[in-house]
Image 1 (cartoon, one colour):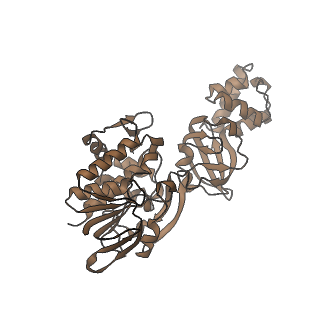
Image 2 (cartoon, helix red, strand yellow):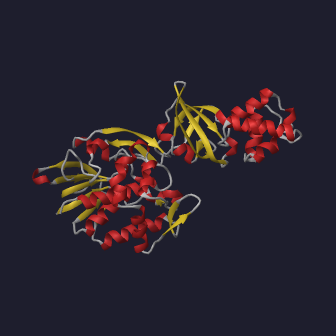
Image 3 (tube, one colour):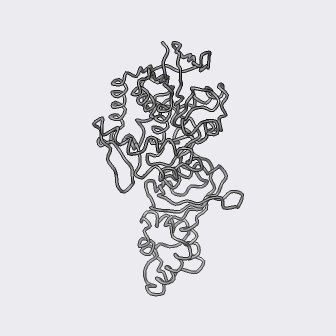
Length: 406
């Protein structure tokens, strides 16, 4: 059978591309190498499925590093409001968790989301071939494509390559699309893990797993030069630094870099002024209480003072200038050397992928091969945590589907 569109990969980009192409009257098939579509989607939002984020498309563009502008056509073609309407129309409304800006299905279940997508695919007569790994993708005569799989062969007028990146490989995201694109003449930029924790030398907070700081700061240094800074929520785990502060900035961090962490997100000069004023007016106040009033968690305070060899029962008036400087440095610019970043098994997304220079951002079609489209993490796009990546994947898939000529 000759399909109008074959989608390679059954993630959100591929599924939404297939659904919207079929609604235009195209004969569509999805080829999925695992035994079920949406495996990685099941892990989204820790199983609760954070699908999108609050804000307008223009706000989203700032959450994709240096490549956000590429997504302008995709995000305006299929907006966050359109994604919310899709789920509402299919009886699984999305709800906003206001303090985070994240949208989840009202059941907070990724299983419900995947089941719904299967139902919509079936309703729109999308053929789904599971346990079907694409091994060769060839552009042949009459502008058609021949797809050779682990089972049978397929023919298609158009291809949507939506195989994902390399993160969470157990879900089927193993970088399969990169060699397929390369053989069709596309440049693939080196993939690397992104949205990943960072590991540092002599990590001191193993016993403080679960402690977090709101709106902490981070400065990034490479070869003794400051190369970046950011703010966000910081999380201690038993092995590494994590939380949005780290995850969203990990695309810029390399092994061997130095990071300086400002736990309280307050300027050193401002904190010193507060310290001196408090010591002058309330010198008998203990250092523990002072740090607690600044917002530092009790377990952190105890560990922090121990690291600095400062007794936790000292009063502010008893703190020497040297000790005060140690406290200020430790709170506002504690330095760590990055020993490694999390690998693909724990990275949420992949940075790198098919070069955006060879893709038309207004259609998601290849500039090299007519009828070849791309969507999702297989391209060189990676966004922040919070639903941005899934929204972008869906938007790219829908734009590709809308752009296919009937």
